[in-house]
Amino acid sequence: MIELIFLFALVILPIAIISDKRAKKSCTKRKKKKHHHNDVKCYFVRNYDGDTITVNIPEWPDIVGKNISVRICGIDTPEIKGTSGETKEKALAAKQVVFDICSNAKKIELRNVQKDKYFRLLADVYVDGKSIGKTLLNKGLAKPYFGKTKNLW
Image (cartoon, rainbow, N blue to C red):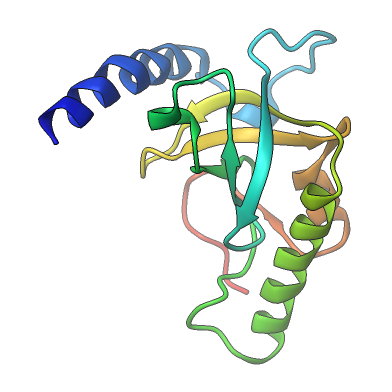
């Protein structure tokens, strides 16, 4: 267990420190660049809900690159657990949209990778060149969210 924690500290902490320095501005509020130098290519595993996916990152060691949770930056979708009625329907619809998009993807990229307050990866997620966050916002299945107070649904 200590070896696992030590390895985690060696790999994730440097990424987190670099990401924190780069994350002075919110991920989706930054100026758009033509080239994304910190893009991370990954493969979809599953999604828990509309704003959190699990991926494998083949370029990273398995301990930090396999079955990794990624929070989609800049959006909040309704929670599946603890909700009912129309809110639960939106939560399930958001989850299904993300599943359909990611499971049929040719290319998934994580851009502007950071860590969130729960030490998950936080990133702009692009599937075949299109932002999942923007897609969910356009469909009315997500609200803008930048880490402050959660939206009420």
